[in-house]
Structures are given as C-alpha cells and as structure tokens.
Image 1 (cartoon, helix red, strand yellow):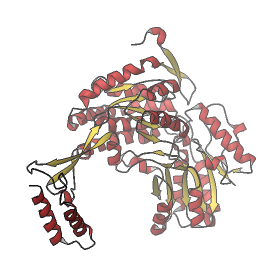
Image 2 (cartoon, one colour):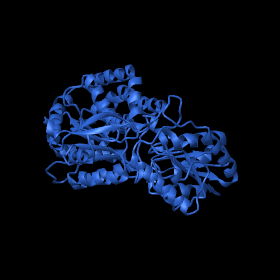
Image 3 (spheres, one colour):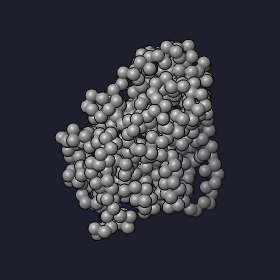
Length: 515
C-alpha cells in the first residue's frame, strides 16, 4: 500500500457555496498493477458463484441504499450542486430500479440459452452460454455520479466480473460513498475497488489492460480511451455526448410541451447528456409557444434549498463552455428571451436558465454540446425541414417529437438518427431499464440497460452437443462418391420449393456411405 508521502490530498468544495467541505486522498498511479492483481484474484472466485448468489449481494446493496436514501441524496447534492429532489429522482431512483431489474432478470438473461439447430445438423443440440470477461474498468462522470457509475458496475458484477471504478474527481464524495456502500454490503475483497483521482489516474488504469472498459463522459476523452483500448484489443462501451433535439409541431399540446422543454433543458442545470439542447418549433405556433416557454422559465426557483427547482453548475470549467457558446451566438445576432449576457452573470456556479432566439444552425450553440442551462429555439416550416435540423449535428443520443398525430410522430421518430426517441415526453428512455441505452454518430459506441446491458460484460460462447453414437459424420472423410450426393441434397433442400423425397433419399445414401 502507499506510504504517507505518496498520498496526494484533494480539497473538495461544494459547488453551490464554494466552501471546502472535505478532503480526499488520490490513488497513487504506481498502485494500478496491484488493483488489477487483486481484481483478477477476486474474479477467479466471484465468477464461479451461481448468479443467484451474486444477486444476493445486490439485494443487500439495494436495502442499504433504501435505508440510507436521505443521507446518499445529501452527499450527491453537496458534491454536485443539484437540488435534493433531482438527487433522489434522477440519480438514486434509477440506480435502485436498475438493481431491481437485474435481480428480476439476470438469471434468465445470463443463463444458458437454447438455440435452434439447422436440419442439416440433425441430431445435435445448440446452446449459448455467457462467460464473464474478467476485470471491468468503469470510468464514470460527474453529472449523475451515482447512477452512471453504479448501473454498469452492478451489471458487470451480475455477469460474474470484478470491477474497478474510477469515479470523476469533480464529485469525489459520491465516489467515496459508492465505495463505502459496496464494502458495507459485504462484497468479497477485490470484487469492487475504487481508484480516486483525475486524468492521470484514469489514463493509468486505462493502460493497465482491463478486460473491458465502460466509459461515460466527453467525446474527446472517449476517443482517447478508444485509441488506447484498440492497441490491446480491449472491447469498450462508450456513452458520450448529446445535443438532443426537441421537435414541436403545431398540433402538439403546447402547455405540456413548454413545461417539458423547460424541465428537459434545465434539469440538473442542463448538465445532462440527454438534455433538450435544441428546440425546433413549427412556425405557425412559434410566437405562442415562446411566450409559454418564457412564462415557465420565469416561474423557476433557483438555489440550493429543498424546495428550489434549479441548482448550480457542478464543474467550473463548464461555465466557460456555456459562456463561449452564448457569446458567439449573441455576437452573430442571436437574442435573449430569458437570462442574462455572460458579462452580467453573478459570481459563483449558479447560471440563469437562458432561452435564446434568432439562432442559426451553424452556430456553436446548435452544433456543440453545451451541458449547461442554455436553450436555443428555432422555427421550422415543414416536417422535412424539422427532420433535417434535428439530424444536422454530429450527435445522436436522444430526441423528442411532439404532436397529437400518432402516425406523424412515429414517422418522424423513425427518421431521426438517434439512439432513442421519446414521443410527447423528454429524456425518460434512460429510466426504462428494459430499453437499450446508447447513441449514434459521436454520441457513443454500444448499448447498455436491457438484456444487452447485462450481456455486454460477457463473452457469448456457442456450444453444440452430439450424443456421439454414430461412427462418423456425413461431411467427414472419405469424400469418395459423396459429391453428387451432396449436390442433390443441397439442391433439394435450398430450392424455393423443397423436394423432401430427394432430400431424404440423398441423406440416407450419405449415411450409408459412412459405414
């Protein structure tokens, strides 16, 4: 273990107040090999446990989280600056629901699956088994530091893997909380390990040759991780950025859509990969809708109290991203419908929820991920134009379509290049653990949640069984005299109208030729 002089201590400030509330120890980089050594040792025993026994540990974890829900919510709120209601609704609840989902479905999903066997392989049986990969490295972000760490962790554990978590250094108290929860739930030593620290720690563990990497974060960092993983042929899942469009047609329920746009854009102060970051409104209702939108924004309460709606930003550097995008838009003629110019912002991490109009499609505010409380609104004239606008970025994580016309909603949803689409609601696909979650284009690689979210952490193993009673197989040596029999066999089998009489005749001749 590390000596006292090895330890780097990180002061932890509460984003909402700026006050130092704790101090964290960073994991020394040179300890990385020992983490993998312990993880592989733990994997050797954990992977042999029946799935039901692994699920027993998850049950203990879930109950501990239920018992200490308020304490966990307050840690999340202190560490991120989000209000308590968002901490419990959007971070804790989806995590508990994910554990429930795995408890209910893991045995069936990860158990031995029977597969069909072609008639030409008559007499054999086919199966698929799911074999755990080994040590899984999970690198998680700061915006939902509990949910986006624990869901891949528990999925990997259910599959029989051991896990190393590298939580974001921006929200280290949640990382410490996760470590403590697993420890007190009784998971065997080495099954779960947490490496605390910043980019250096993340880079060291990525280069440490894990058996799988699950990363949630920025496109830039995701590309770096993918390059490193490719050198060692390490499989990855990358959950990256979003620039999610919200398309509102004139026949939509405008009151509901306005409320949804405000929540979808400003929940967690806009720091959501699935935020409504671009709002496209049919021109026939654009003015009416904008007024409703402004009214909803003006009703918001911002602060760090238990009854407030919008909390603070979490990561100081993210303020600069929001400022840069807003400055460029205003310089090019965009106008504020709500909010303030960056030069009028107050000190601290609270940014005003800002709606921007007169926006062009090539502006940064449209093309680049914002991850802050900034919502550009753009009118459109036709369905085709709305689809082109929505598909007109490098991202494709989530989208929403608003209309009372069910046929039109489904038609537009099918044409959007996106990992998920919600009709007459926003964001919520991530809350349904029965649905796959992931993005298209630069929004990432791979899927988790649903059956895929459990199976990605396992190798698929194909198994075929034969009773071994026959002396030989028809395709084995010798080949003498077999070609015309195979020719007639395959012609009779693969013809549009199968000739079962000739098929049987040639198959029996091939069987006799083996004697």
